[in-house]
Length: 157
Image (tube, rainbow, N blue to C red; front, side, top):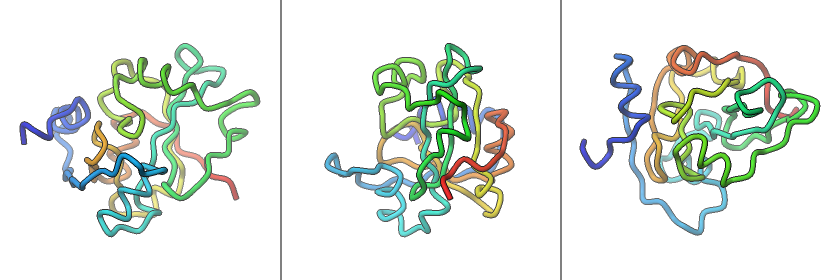
């Protein structure tokens, strides 16, 4: 497991939650990393979630982490009046992860986190394990607890 160790996997292990890792061959030309993971692993895209860093009022340094289904579009108005995706460089610097591998777990600094309510409809969900080509599967309740997230609808109708 040494080759798969990331801050996210360490955080899951340290919390003592049941989880599984799923590796796949990442294609650098992939447009959507979360959709790539769903396709490569043969998963329903509704169970694979992307981690987006949003600049919004109220978050640490104005940043909030939003976890939404891979095929969905984030409704920025659900986050705040002036919410916008954070610049990639800023998201990478604050989380300690590279874009496409940003995990909601094990970030450099815990940011306020929101999880789309659709996650609760699944027995398990998949999020980035902290690097491109590696997904972490866990129960939605564990994801919410580990990130201290608020759960609400974040995806556009």
